[in-house]
Amino acid sequence: MPVLLITGASTGIGAATAHHAKEAGYDVVLAARSADKLEALAAEVGGLAVPTDVSKWEDNEALVKRTLDEHGRLDAVFANAGFGGARGWLKGSPEEWRTMLETNVLGAAYTVRAALPALTEAKGHILITSSVAGRRVLPGSFYSVTKHAVTAMGEALRQDVDGTGVRVTLIEPGMVDTPFFDNRPSNALEADDIARAVMYALSQPPHVDINEILVRPTAQSG
Image (cartoon, rainbow, N blue to C red):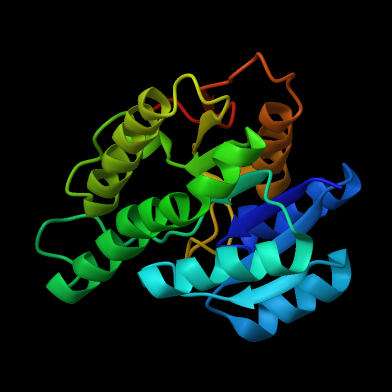
């Protein structure tokens, strides 16, 4: 079976994608910091749980090595780990900004770099979670800054792997009702909605590369 590695897998979009991928016939490798939630999800979907801090390069190396040791192959990676914070340049702390940058930007880049040799061999697929906030600037949002970087990362990567058979897809959700928010939004997308978008990109034939999928709830104007 093809193997899909998902970071930020313990809750929300990552967990929903794990369920959909398993139903579609993938073996799933699940990575997140929260070991307890990760193990519970792995038990549900029959996946491999690998506690991982994506902001650490050595954790990403170990994650990919564990995947290859267990399955002998890696066909797709969904670099989904990330978090946000309060809007306002004087809100949040410099330490929070640093952690957000290390997780949202460097974490995704590290995951992709660690997996790229195996994905090149497999002519595989890289999916990265950006955001609508990575396409339009949100006032005072450092999260938006990080997601603009992720959007640029996707295109830089797509150009770099041109000719290798590796496909690159940016997943750009609008407002989604997930544990990402302290105050859960109404009229929002559900994690399953984004998981279906991920599976749509993965389900295309090898000559089709869906570069960006922007998904907003019908009620979201911006």
